[in-house]
Length: 332
Ligand code: PMV
Image (tube, rainbow, N blue to C red):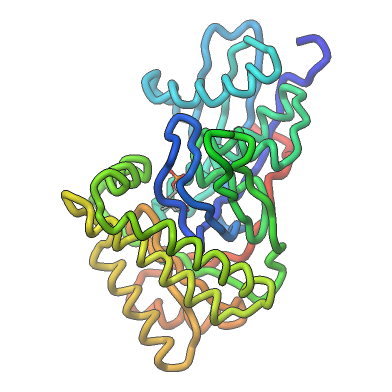
């Protein structure tokens, strides 16, 4: 690899979907059944460095200073292969990755992880892909990661047929307005189904899933208008409804399953109560028990105070809109 940089390091942030991605039409290429839309958050991010060298005999990854087991490495190596093939490079790599997620949150984030790793591969191998093209590679690490290739509000287009390049992401608004998210970390001993297993099971067995693509199409059109108009109320109502429709498809799967825990329900009831009292906020949930409360940044202190009556301080994490991936200096 004579003319290219052999190493690069990036920071990428996680994102939370307001219009959810749930189900693949092509599992090999991670092509989704529907488009989706998210907000990138500042509070949770991953920093990753990759080094390629002909001296390495195999790929290795140290996540939070702990070496990843060989069997868990297969998906990572397959992901890096996409970039190696594009660059015509064979060298093995060493990856160091640190997840900056408040420990109580238990929010292992594949979105920020694959966005950081993909960005680092792109630079280290001298590929110079723009963010749109990069998103089609990052998507194949984890679908939601393709949205973390941008900051602010991000739209992931479902694309056409089996054409990988048609399913890309783009920023539609920098979210530089009065928006925030309170993450309510629900502690649990129960290990949730992975999103990959959960969505596959839902697609295959839930009679409600048939309705899902049409619901997303309607919600997405209204959400795009609401973001354009900076209409917080409509955005909140659509996100909450969209998330609950997704969770309803899981309740109707056979056998039924859910990511809700007792404290998740408590948090959702609290949001409804705050709304009745005139403090506007809305909830969304993903493939785990944590609840994310969409609010105006200017209401954050009041909302957090209301939650602090029921949840411990380290369960409540404030987030603002976050940026896309950034190159960083790696510190050992
Ligand atoms: O791409 P994954 O495996 O992280 O799946 C994401 C699924 C949800 O978080 C539930 C929804 C979404 O759009 O992020």
